[in-house]
Image 1 (spheres, rainbow, N blue to C red):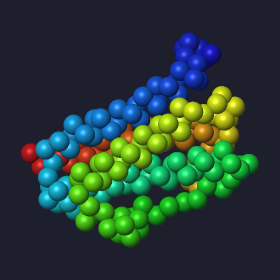
Image 2 (cartoon, rainbow, N blue to C red):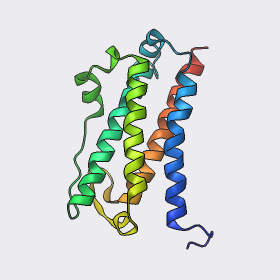
Image 3 (cartoon, rainbow, N blue to C red):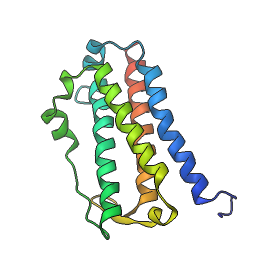
Amino acid sequence: MSEAGTTWGQARERQISAMRLTCEILGHILRNVSDDQARELRDGPDGWSVIEIICHLRDFDEIFHSRALMMLEREQPQLPAYDHEGMAVERAYQRETVVDAYDALKNSRARFLEFFERLRPEQWARGGVHPERGQFSMTDALMQVSAHDLDHLEQITRILRGAE
């Protein structure tokens, strides 16, 4: 138990709950956003559009999940790096619809949440080497997803607020 009285297990549960809330919050944010708005509204002239951010969240759930699986299956694997910008072009994010991208995110998120919820205590100690962060544990992976979600929720709300 930490000085604040919270165990690592409790902290992880809070992060898992935050990951679950991301999709609910995003659903509320996107409720009245059309496909045209999602494609046109951007984070600055060279920034990502709303639809690109949704697709990025969806695809990075898959990437985070695959990295976590590698950490369970191998001893200290070198986790692969990914080209965020390249993926957006390669996977044609701008041609996606809000409904399809959001539904795919909800599905990938449900699977990822189930993965984290099933980890046994000893599996949380598993780790690997992150391409940008160095040594990286399963707990770090969980924290990274939550922080990543918050960054992009803020980004989408800022973009939409700027369009009002």
